[in-house]
Structures are given as C-alpha cells and as structure tokens.
Image (cartoon, rainbow, N blue to C red; front, side):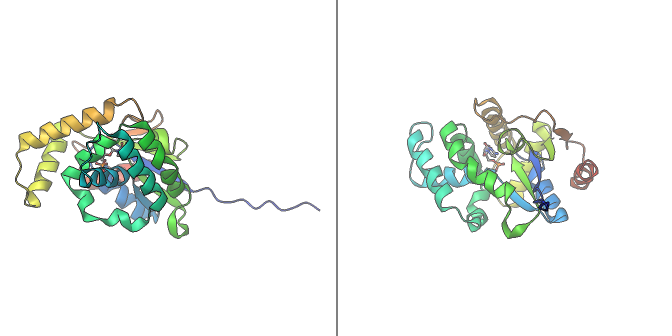
Length: 222
Ligand code: DC
C-alpha cells in the first residue's frame, strides 16, 4: 500500500532590510500584525550585545573576543522577553550595535538563533517578518518576499531628529545627520554581511511616501 505523504507547510518568510529611520521597523511590525506573523527585529540582538559591552566597559574595536563571548552567551540564554528591554531603543544602543556588528565571529554566534526563530516562529505562527540589514542576503536568502526600504539621509535624519525631540532629548539636527551618516557608512561598508538590497529584493524609497503608502505598496507586492 502506498504511504500517504504528509506535507509540512513551509514557514512564510518576508525580509525587510534597510538603513536606520527608513521606516522599515514600523512597516515590518505592521505587516507582521496584518498577516499574523511573528515579528523579528534582528537589530535587537546587536543592541543587546552592544549595551552589555558598554555596561562591562568594553571597547568593541579593542576587545573583540569579549564581545563574541557576550554574543555566545546571548545565543545560549536567549528568551523573547529580552527584546522588550526599553533601553534597547536608545541611540547609544544603536551606535553600540553598529560598532559590534561588523565582527564576523559575533555575527556567526547569533546567526543560528536568528534562523531558528525565523523558520520556527513562536506560538506556531505560520510566518515571520524579519527586519534588519542582512535578512534577505544572509539570514534568510530563500525568503519568499524581500524588500529593501530606504530614504534619503536628509529625510531619515529629519525623522530621527523629530522623534528624539518628542522624547525630550536635547540634540541638534546636525549631530543627528552626522550620526546617521557614520552609521550608514559602517553598516554598508563592512566586509561581513554589509547592508545592501538582496538581488531579488523590491527597493522602496519612502522619502516621498507616508507610512500608509509604504505599507500599501509592500502589501500590493506580496
Ligand atoms: O535596525 P537597528 O537600528 O536596530 O540596527 C542597529 C545596528 O545593528 C545597525 O546599525 C547594524 C546592526 N545590524 C546588523 O548588522 N544586521 C542586522 N540584521 C540588523 C542590525
């Protein structure tokens, strides 16, 4: 007698990569809600490592072994509630994340965890939306849908500046613009997993789009 083949449904994966303040985070979260998929903010892994390095007084560029060890511990002890730490949202966490992220062994230490979360989302959800820099190129190169969300440096700096002002942070537009340029340069020009659109990604420039328009454009292209 023929055995019936049971097909295991494949997890649907959507990757949303792009630079800071491009609108990719808001868009990815909204998309995950809309589809009832798991939302994975991959930048938070680097933010967690960066903040821990800072707490221990480690300079990432000088003591690379120490930051790799932090990343390995994170991968071993990871729980989802770690992602809810409000300190992860700070600009310091973002800058520290960008400084630890270029180191290949550190990226390697968290890669399996990122892939596992994407392929077997918690609570049995049928899909995952990943947000980051290398989701479509390295973490999930076989994702069903890939997007690269971008905007001009000026637009992104203005958005970030307005956000910081609304949080009561005392900073100038010039400083925000300089930080943004520095971070883009580090993320895009590192040797390992640089920020770039995957070959088959749809590139969306949100400079002239509202958040709703960007969301609709992505949904239309699924
Ligand atoms: O998306 P974010 O601002 O939380 O990312 C913080 C930093 O983490 C970013 O400047 C570079 C790094 N990062 C990365 O190298 N790869 C990812 N997939 C996500 C973030």
